[in-house]
Image (cartoon, rainbow, N blue to C red; front, top):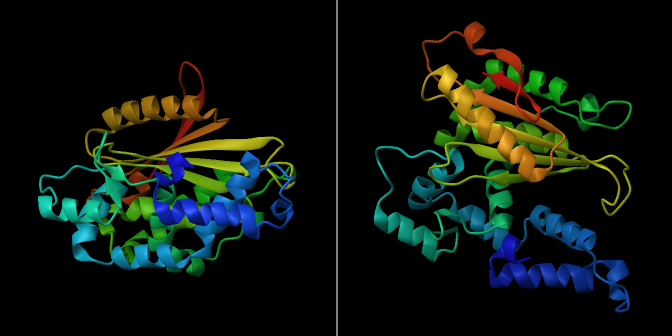
Length: 288
């Protein structure tokens, strides 16, 4: 709960209320509260779009907030840094913390902000979970990412243009695409921050379809990078980062997505897929 809220009073109380008053089986005070119960309460709170979280969404529309949050979502450091007053303002709002590094204030905000920024996009995407499930109820990530590659090729220019946070457009569009599919039973955990030059996504998908997430879980890591340096350097750095994050999460699959935003490169040259074998695992790179 500390990692999820960093002590934000409204979030702590809202989670406590979910666990002690709204979950029917926990109204019996002799029933222990489990980690599975907590995770369910957390997801319910995020999806509820409660008043506090709606107010958070309103703040994201402010120009001063966008200057700071946009850079955090993209993970990029640009030559033009946000004004110090803007950073202090966003920190005072409780949206970011500056220690040990500048980052979104807590994990619930990390989940809520991308979801809210892409909420209408998610609802307009014609994607269904069942399209990407194997007979064993596993996510077919190769099929899913091939579909996203094609979608990104055809639609990215028009969709990203609609975003207020265009600097994080590719990352947000992918997350909207994934959220539409993963909402059918799984969850996405996001890691991003200023200067990381990447966004880490962990998809968790329960294979037993039973409440509580007590059975086998399919864990998939996606590393998102923008191509800034040479393709070789971007790939090498990305593979190293992807392997490290996959090991940290205990993932069974790992994918590296590289967005090449150079306007003079044709889509036929951009769209690529390669399989790489590192010391410990196989990683698939997807270029677009």
